[in-house]
Length: 143
Image (cartoon, rainbow, N blue to C red; front, side, top):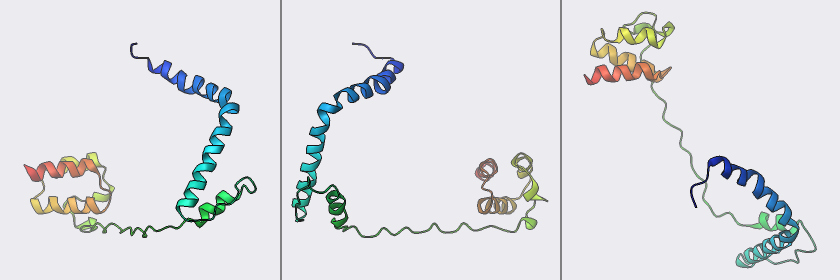
């Protein structure tokens, strides 16, 4: 049997599978319910919780789940360290830097000294983080 076209596979998943489940649901649903009851009872026995008659109260499952112990320690989420803002914009070697677009900044980078280039990089990392400018600075610093 050859590979099936994606469209045929999509029709199987979106049309035939749901239709088959709909037609088989009356026959299979009681089995699924019983399996679920067995699993909940097994879980309660494993945890040493009383096993009530699940046929008498549908809220028992919710109560059983609420009684489950949570033994996981809390996860500490450490904040990322702040990125230094770099030098003030008015001290950069490119006048009116903050008002310029990346396409206006990139051609001016080639004429900067190493320390001026580093100042622009530090400022950009702390503010707008424009990849075009940062990539050009990396090229100039590498070469």
